[in-house]
Length: 287
Image (cartoon, rainbow, N blue to C red; front, side):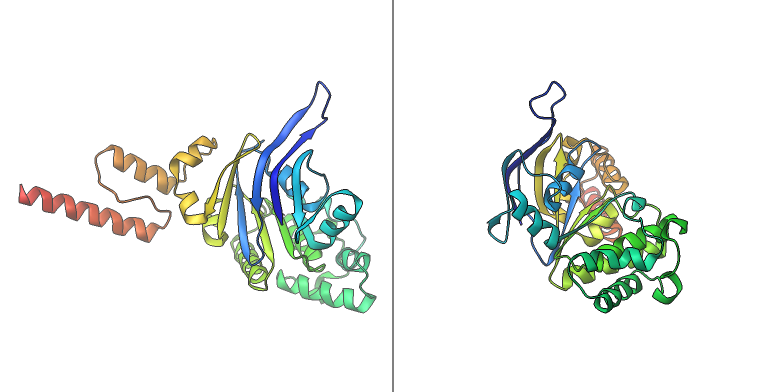
């Protein structure tokens, strides 16, 4: 899936026109996790809506498998290939029972009743919720964390090639986050793509193969996750506060410590500080 010089404006041609994305060229590759990082209003959610086919670029082009994803046919192709999990789980939940909710998407895509139930059960078990225990429960009566898991399971049950996740870790406890990481990595390893929008740099460090940074609707940079997340200048241009570990390293450099590069790995940082201190001590002794 490729965005080529894509842009999108809300209410175009009116006094309230808002250009949410401008000139974005980006490839979403199967078999990888692409992280999307940016402050509020940077265009992250609009980007996901484009990839899902909810809206079409008002300029530029989106292609899927080499074919333009435009018009009714393009929107249908995107709907079949992608699954979007939004930040608010209650937007996904509408049926009287968890089972009905989970089976709705697969049935809508042409699966038979029993096949839909099998996919629903597998997806819910992936999220750590026993199907036999939860299938008859009212999804809106679940805890926020359980709602998030059911919402994601409902999308997984449709087996999308492109899984689009919009800030879905809030409301999950430590175990829920660990399980979600495993689900994301498993989905990638099965040959699918995951696009992960999050403010959590630790999550991106653990999960993302590449990270794209947005600001003001523009793509400031995209590259290997480690390089992007350690680029203090790029993060500051995006109006993004530095992670504590990067902030510490910047301050140490300002105080004269000769640190080599930047890192988000605490163990790596400890080694670099030790090496810098040793080099400083050796230089002092030589003098």
